[in-house]
Length: 70
Image (cartoon, rainbow, N blue to C red; front, side):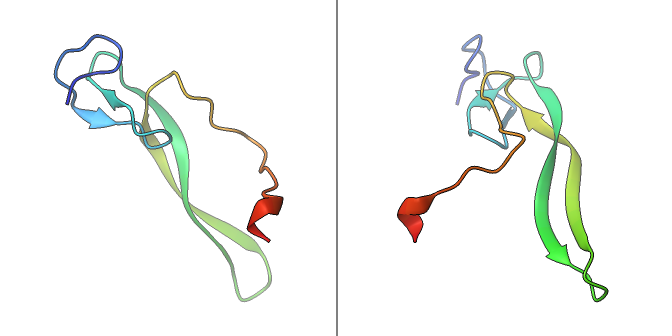
């Protein structure tokens, strides 16, 4: 697979969109792996602090509604 940006061999894929990226074009961004409630009712997240990011896709900060899944 080749890098989306430069068409050279890729070294990984964007965690958000799956585009292939080489070391020169790879960026890093936090990624939430899992969310859960603890025994006291608080919310916790397991986060990968430096996940690969292509720099092109636009991960949303706020959740979006998906009414078609109801």
